[in-house]
Length: 83
Image 1 (cartoon, one colour):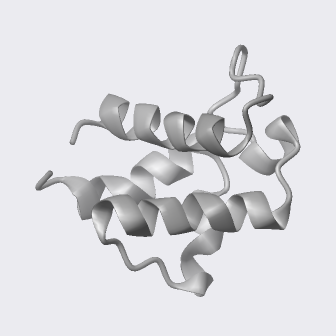
Image 2: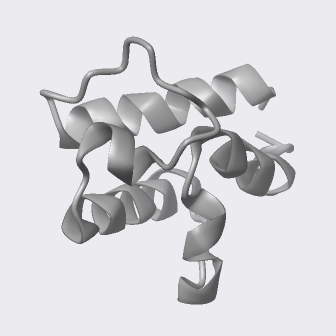
Image 3: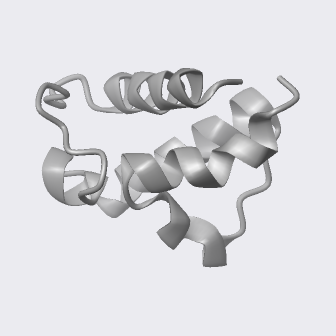
């Protein structure tokens, strides 16, 4: 998957979890939780959806790597490169 495809997947998952999430003007380098008012359950839902869709194991200690859209792409890119 390309970086843009990964970004689109993350945004799609967020939109599925929070239909009211405002994606316009999203800063890729700011924490998603702050910008989209996501709570911890929303965040866990995102992680679980990534696990389900792509059979990824994301250890809890890696959760900070998923804080921003840019960090999500950076973290997921090597894990999804063969898809």
